[in-house]
Image 1 (cartoon, rainbow, N blue to C red):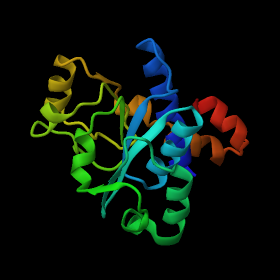
Image 2 (image 1 turned 60 degrees about the vertical axis):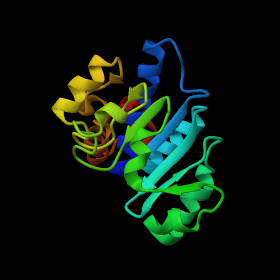
Image 3 (image 1 turned 135 degrees about the horizontal axis):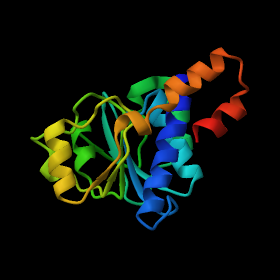
Length: 184
């Protein structure tokens, strides 16, 4: 599945990003914009790597809990009710979806939309690392502003290349476990 392969590359890129900055994903707080095919898989993989997913969003709103969200429970809810999962989760603060981008987290994974991070909100982004699952989620103006503030941002064509790479490999009948290894 393209979303899963994209998530492999997003989390692998985030792992490399954290390592470059002298850290690992273990213990980092993560916000995932968009809990669709890419974002939900990225959240699961981030938790498997030891990160704490503290916020997620769908088209219906955002959930935030600084102690961490139960990603397994979110995945189960998503399977049953789709993006309405934010309405039935309970135990976390509900917020407008746009507010997720401005939370004080270590790592922001924008997996939802084109130019969701733009000149109008770049100054309020508090993540120290951004690793994109969506195509071009950061406008050029926002990219410059974030870079000037020292926010570490990988190019989206690096961090989200897994979908295309994985899909191509799957077309050529490469085993899924081998695809994951190659993408990572």
